Image 1 (cartoon, rainbow, N blue to C red):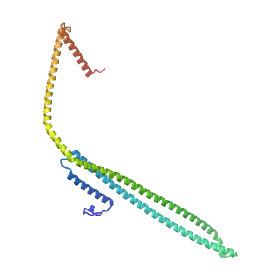
Image 2: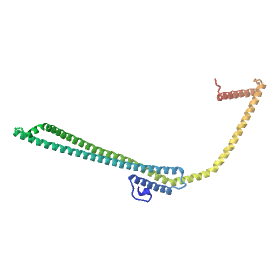
Image 3: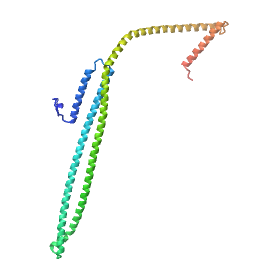
Length: 304
């Protein structure tokens, strides 16, 4: 375990991941101190939340960059393990080729010896025990020769397969490295642009703090000035409301009284007054009652 984990302030880290974690902690502590020193206590809550959100976005961007670095290290370790496995496979195939080559050489030596014996037998056609033994072993030697030819062809095929796999491994290794580097470069560029934009926004927000504080002070002063006027207007509104309610109440009483008088006139004249003014009053009263009836029917419709 490194010194950072033990809490003794060591400078060495046990792994790249541990180093990235320590870097993130230092970055977070630095920006927290900066935020505490810059942001005043009387800052508007909305601006405080915006700055904290920008800090969180910056921290997320840094974490993403560190994670991409860790992914790149993992890909590098994978490439190294694949390369090691390919080297081990190549070494085993080389040993197999050498062993087959030695067997092929031994078979050729045996064939050469038997061919020399056959030539001696041709010169001296008299059968002998050695010649008879050579003749008896001629068929196995022919089979051994055929097997040696097959082994040589197998060695050639194996060599071709090995070369093909080597070329494929080299191509895939280059392709993986190219894809990993391209993807990482694009993501790093995007994150760098986002980080620069967040820093610009953060600087703009910090520059606007004084302006917002001044605007807040001016608005507070205006609010202090407008508060008494608002209180006065509210009082006047309440007084007007009382007056309006009294007027409506009085109007309702007058309407009731007028309705009562018109009803008495209608009953007294049996609905057929002789005076012109009384006819006009009753016509107006009847129209008013018809309108009130229609309004009541519209408000409370009857269900069929």
